[in-house]
Length: 151
Image 1 (cartoon, rainbow, N blue to C red):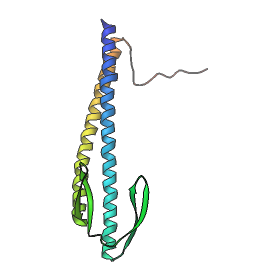
Image 2: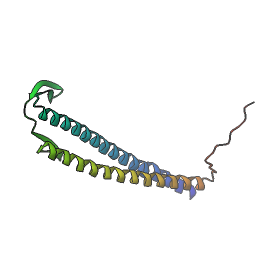
Image 3: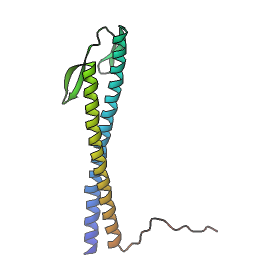
Image 4: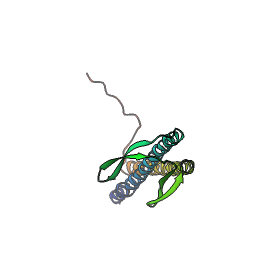
């Protein structure tokens, strides 16, 4: 009976808990990448605002797709398009875009905190299952491994 329980716990550990942990960590990675992109966009918007104040023309490269770039001169930086989600782009002024980015970053950071909490809970469940497996197999486990003297 104990070998069946051991197999059942090992299966649950490997197929459920560890897969859940991988999924949560991948989700957190996507959210962190999105926050990074938004912060970069905010930096670009600040530079656009500086150029608008100085009445400068901005020279840039634009990706046409498939990594084909063309040089572009931007005269009017009053409005920009920001991807708001679900492949929807909205035209904002620089100030509106900055406010939107700040709110979205705050929202994403809250989601990141939830994924951190979820990963901590899954890690705790993994430790509980591992402890149960040790008990079923009558293994003693200490956090410190004893050191042997080598002669």
